[in-house]
Image (cartoon, rainbow, N blue to C red):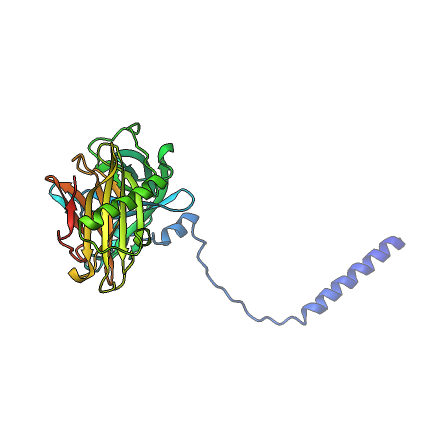
Length: 343
């Protein structure tokens, strides 16, 4: 009975406590807010507006281009367009100031990433360049150009080369064999000495004033091969000046020459003598060579140095005589004065 009594008193106490507590509660009203259900996941995706596709740049309308490829660091090389290669000759590239977005537009349909270019030197196919699709402005010459880059691949006997002429693979009607004979003429002491001998032969023949030393005015000498694969050289001699942009001395002059090896040694075949008092400065220096139009004679890519700028030009033989096939329109026209053949 005690157990029951303890239980009943406890229950009564609890009930009283609760009843008493209810007397202290004040009703404050209620608030109702209606919220829509969360949207399904795909509905959120639909609200995000798609990004507008980047507008594709229009390609610059040009035909086949001739390129200069120059070796860089770590197997890379630069790709510089020289001129448009047309059936009627060479035409200049468009000027950046007259061509909107020239630099970003130039690679479009021309040297996008993975585009292959075939390299030529000394009458043979010597390798390739795979473009990385990049483009930047090259202002080394008076005609600024878009310049690309890529990875260089050379045949083993051409790995010493520094500069090459190139054409895009897709622009070639027929791909030359990579097994074509390559003369691999390299610059050695014999060719260096032959350049001095050629200058000593031409100086009295052309009535060039003798310098204190012939070696002292030689600014550049390069080796290549002629149309028959014979060793050849191109050399620039400059007195009272240098192979750079700037004003010459009044008594200065330049002598550019090409000499080819025959049974008696090296003999001059072409010379270009120009005095400072003959007109505006235009001093040539050799860059690369290849027979571009299958004439039997290599075409020489030259850089010219003037008083205020530098420009590119092509020297070749047509109709039995040497002639300037092309030069940047912003360059100084040296004319044919002083350009002679000796064979």
